[in-house]
Image 1 (cartoon, rainbow, N blue to C red):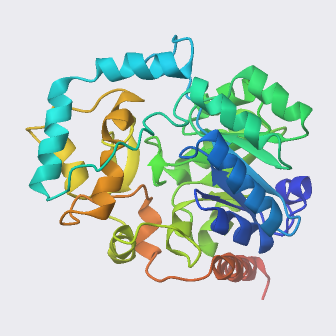
Image 2: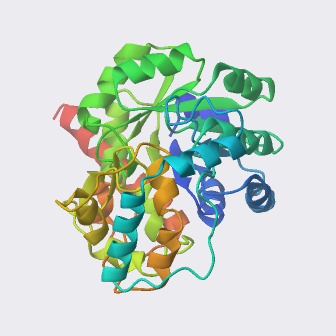
Length: 370
């Protein structure tokens, strides 16, 4: 497979794998694609450890880092992370805290032994910039911005380090804003995707974005892609590679929580929902008692980003450890209906390519004269 993106990064396959697990990132890069580590949940010190490990386990193959630097969020005008944290904590209504604790008690989730104090992490410009600094100290090939155009100075800094910049977009308008910010690659992500996602389907979005950004900007197709036939479809729509995420949650190397894994393996493509119940912005999750409760009549409603995550951050590990398991959810796309077995990450890459080749051969046969 040869596209502009494989030539740009020197990779065998135009398959990008987003994951919060370093083992998955390294495994995909070694298999000929490009792993991209989600930095969101790591402190700068933890991220340094993760990237050092990846450096040592990719065999010199390229990899990337994904950060979250939203353009709009509550408290964006705060001076620093400490001031921001204090201001936002004070803005969380007591009614929301009471609703959360009542929901946890209803499902038998044990009280916390100690606070995790990881409420903000990389959800803001102030807290993501230290992650960018750490990432650029390593030999990364790509810096991706997951929520909105990255700040112009961050794009410039990445380019000074010889690092390409990608931006996720869920509409053609968002894609044009990303190009204006100077990004090199647009990840056009349809609503089928897991995590933060818009409302336009992948089949409609990809050609819209390709046409909107023109020939000078590389586009990757994203959103519900987990089969080789879908890789072929993405390229047919004008993309030059694919950005995948959900399918890596059920590989051997993944660190998916023990309680979440069986739910993912058993789920169908209809078992997801776009919800604000985790971050305050619409994101696709496995539908469970957690997402239902926040949409229910007794819910006080969700809070704006990043306050919703600040509210629930300490509850999430408690849910994973105890209770009846009904609240356990996870960001995942509609491709979850095809994620019904655990395989090594490298095998997933090879299966994608094998089915892609079969799809291309089938299409080629349709055009051959008898």
